Length: 71
Image (cartoon, rainbow, N blue to C red):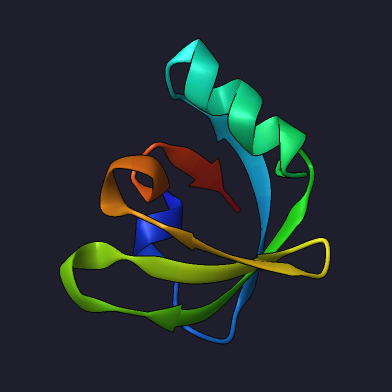
């Protein structure tokens, strides 16, 4: 399942990130790597998700969340 299909309040584990190398490296620098736990805190308009990764909140757009595979 991709992160944009997740439900608010649930935790997921990142299995794969299928983004261009520069975007993937940026997410890794922020702490989102394979095996990391991600909690969905809120969902905003147009598919923007507010997520918590390693104690830090991020807002990720649909173009990013639809390319992060989670379980």
